[in-house]
Length: 88
Image 1 (cartoon, rainbow, N blue to C red):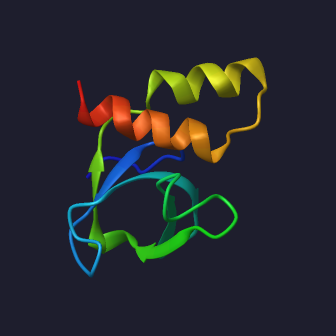
Image 2: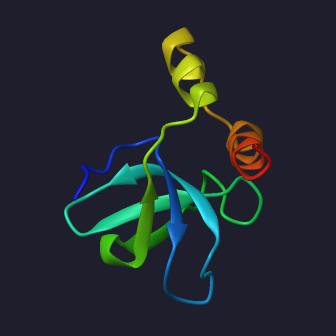
C-alpha cells in the first residue's frame, strides 16, 4: 500500500459521498481530513477513515507549485485542482 501524503487526491469509496474526489489536507493515525473547495471547505474539512478512501497516486502540480512559492492554499485552488483532474 502506498503511503498517504498531504496534497494527494483521494476518492471516497464508502458513505453518502461515495465517488467524490477530494484533496487530503491533514492526517492523523486513523483519519484523513478532506476538502473539495465547494461543499467541504478548508475551514471545516470532512473527517474520514483511511480505509474508506482510495488514493489517487498523484499530487497535483498546482498544489506543489503553490507550496513551493509559499502561498496559502485556498478553496478556489482546491476546486481548480479537482476540476483539472476530472477534465484531463
